[in-house]
Image (cartoon, rainbow, N blue to C red; front, side, top):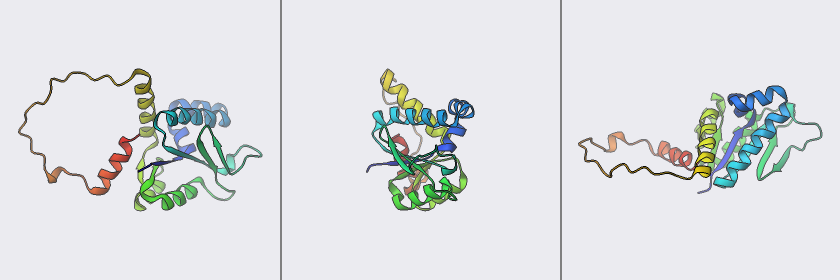
Amino acid sequence: MSIHIIIDGYNLIRQSDSLNTLDRRDIQLGRKSLLDTLAAYKRIKRHRITVVFDGTNAPPFSQRKDQIKGIEIKFSRSGESADAVIKRMAAREREKALVVSSDLDVVNFATSRGAATISSPAFEEKIAMSADMDTKGIENEDDGGWIPTTKKKGPSRRLSKKKRRDRVKIRKL
């Protein structure tokens, strides 16, 4: 099953230390840096990625929908928030969607519609980790093999079916 990553653009930029400093200097620079980072991630993982921005801060003469380096970019219409666009997309995509936002309203709505969610800082960490693994390669340490244990592993420790599905989506990042 293919994952569609739906990102709350300004939420991710403002939650990130590196992107936030660029954003404070120039909002266009913050957006461009985010899109460059996501394009590099897309080359590694090949997931469908859509970034949603509030249309009030859209560059002049920009389209409401655009695609740069394989990343789909959407600006909300005037009078509409990016959160509303993200909610509409999450409701349409349902289980195929992974919503990246730290906004609790968006996260709760997406979860109620069956979409998986991840916070902006956690997603940024996953992106950095996958880029790091791509450049260095996966280095396996010899852990000595299986170690017998008496710890019980049974259904009482099992996550719910929805949480297991969400974990699978997040592991694919």
